[in-house]
Length: 463
Ligand code: PFF
Image (cartoon, rainbow, N blue to C red; front, side, top):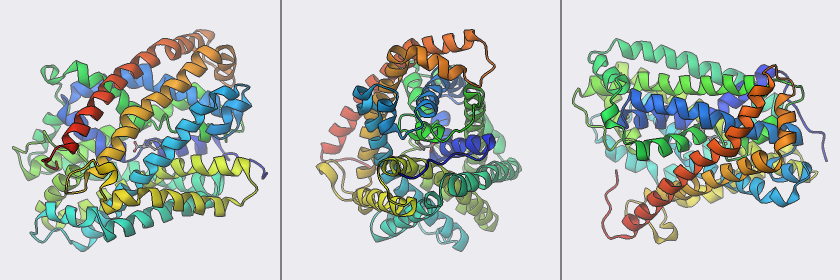
């Protein structure tokens, strides 16, 4: 077995973890969710959820990773609780699963970047048709392959030479470029209407029963929890950093990028159409079509704006996908003598193959409409609504109720926060985190059933 790698610096770890957290979920997903669910009111709920559920849950994964110094599958045995290996195996399985469709969407992003540079969808053609023409079929497969290839290229170089070096460049670029285009977007006419929609709290709009579980699910996804990524990254920690401090920085930066993305998206959309109806936006394809129509409406300036936007989206997506690929890679590396480069190529190819049905729009499980888009939704649904909360729950129960004392030890190591902090944290892990997860699970299962019914029915309109 080869020597386990470590991060070179504390900043390296933090930026890699921020890179994992900041991704399609923040830039593509978050603004639309916030916009649709009561604007600033959603933001407020989301912030509270991140603080009370997301951050404690992230520290759970840090504890397991740093203490065991193993990939998620072997971590529990290493800690002396082999019977909990199923929890780690579940996280790794979800990482593999989610990456397979994350990469298909990543492929769309590359395609849109190219389309923005060349102006392919700026010529008055129906932007919705453009999306359909690239979302499935040979094109989608090719760009899915390219996205995986880029991810493999970084992971193959290693923890410090690949992931750490790449994310040190990527994360600051995402922030700087987003700030830049947010400032530009502020100069567009009607930008104010966009801010209004996004930021004015509309408590009347908030349906608490769905928004809270939704915010919990979003918080897990965007903080990269439940998929072993944070366990894996924390397993490369050599020094005794303060886990709570690092976790806090990561959560804050991650939230800021989500908020910032909205400050780009909404001024652009409301400039394009002051009466735009966003109630259906945010599905697998609608974010692309709505936004690209607005970019196209801006003419040549829109081309620059769109190119920068999709470039940001691409590097954010890549810095996330590498953390998912690293979960699978680290498992194989910890258990075999193969070289990292061959392992990452092997893992990347497997993910590529698993994602093929989604990229091809094949009728997977017989549960989709004729457009094929919903193979992707269905993939997403099971992983996101069911498996993800279950895996966070399993690891939380383990750390809270089984590993308790040792977990306290580990969270205190390198941290200057007092005992009150670690004890409070443990009780959050025992009670608040599971309660939040149960909420999302109920809603998630409901969504799954409704979608399964809709998809199995004869008519289903995409969008
Ligand atoms: N956090 C990423 C996003 O918001 O797009 C997605 C993600 C990456 C989830 C890595 C989980 C993970 F392990």
